[in-house]
Amino acid sequence: MLNIVLLFLIFIAIVAVFGRFRSGPRITRRDGGLKKPRICPECGRYNLQGGPCRDCSSNR
Ligand SMILES: [Zn+2]
Image (cartoon, rainbow, N blue to C red; front, side, top):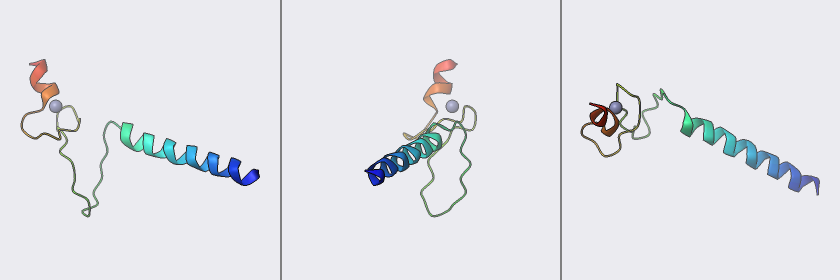
């Protein structure tokens, strides 16, 4: 029974870590292995579609 509880706690910890990584407003990753996503230099949001940022262009 203790193993199940431990696994559950570890699972929650992993989800929390991933949640922090995803919800981080400005992630400065410099590992060249992964294909880095485009981030708008002005608002810092991900721009996966390319081209002008939707958030910035809609505000203007
Ligand atoms: Zn933007």
